Length: 401
Image 1 (cartoon, helix red, strand yellow):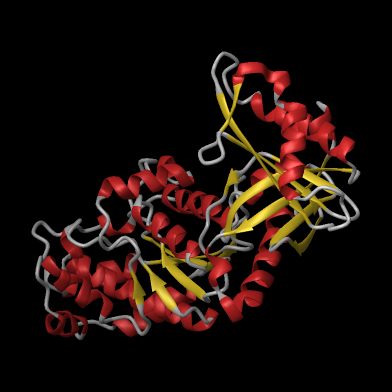
Image 2 (cartoon, rainbow, N blue to C red; image 1 turned 60 degrees about the horizontal axis):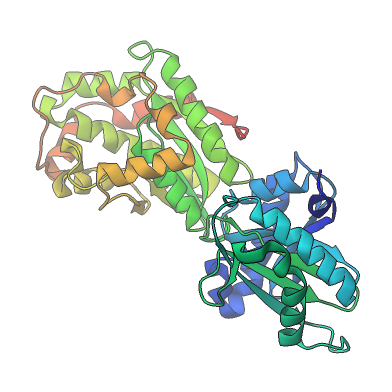
């Protein structure tokens, strides 16, 4: 281990959108602190405090792994590994040389690297001002690298930052990208209707990025669909669970409802009626867990059930607002996010979801709410929903790191 890593003391966390919250900012900051501690719980105890208009995260151990873990915490724009030393010019210069050398290891040895220094003098007793600190340190450490380094104050490949305080001086050059967004839980709880496809996990992730904590509900159609589809859903939730403190999954038996729809409703309306029943069940579960909205992966025009008319028919059955983060996305945009967040390969596991059961030969394109309501009068939908909720299973899903 090199000396720059040995001297690492804390992680500097910069806010994303949270910094714009004005008078409500303390509320969002407290939520971010909770989420940081929860995300790191299995790695290390961490101390979190506000410094420099940022957050300083000091792990008891595994600092580098904690830094990477924080990249999955919404509300964080970037993370820097900060190294400390005595607040003397000699010590600051020595540490700056080490940090710069470590940063240069990430670049090809035969190419020119643009560099700049930024200093902040929080301790006004220090004999040099901020500009003088940068100039003095630069003159001491840059010549050792010859023509490989070029000073560029506007567009630098490496920004070496120095912060001089009364107790310690800190130096850092790295910035790991964060996810941005808002801390999960600050905008309430949503309930995602999670299929085994590509879209709904991405919709859940995007809602979490906007501050929504997320519970999940899925529907299974045993014996028409095997147990593999349930395991696939659990894998998806486990992957998404890394972005929030806890994740609950409700697995609801759906085969009897589908059979009743097949036997008593117009065949062209089957898929729309399936989704209406799912909305009713999800609304009931949401009421129990105090979720404020349902989240779906619907995208306008992507499949027959996702026309304006059919989505109107489906949402009519919900007692809560239905959020569709992917409404205007094309498939490739969704796939790109799914790959980035690690759900794409899981979604591509060849297990059918329950909506493939009794698929109509000619699905309705422009459904009518009145026809849906009339069709549901032909069988005991309320009784079937009660039975499905009785058979629902709730599980706590651990994150897959």
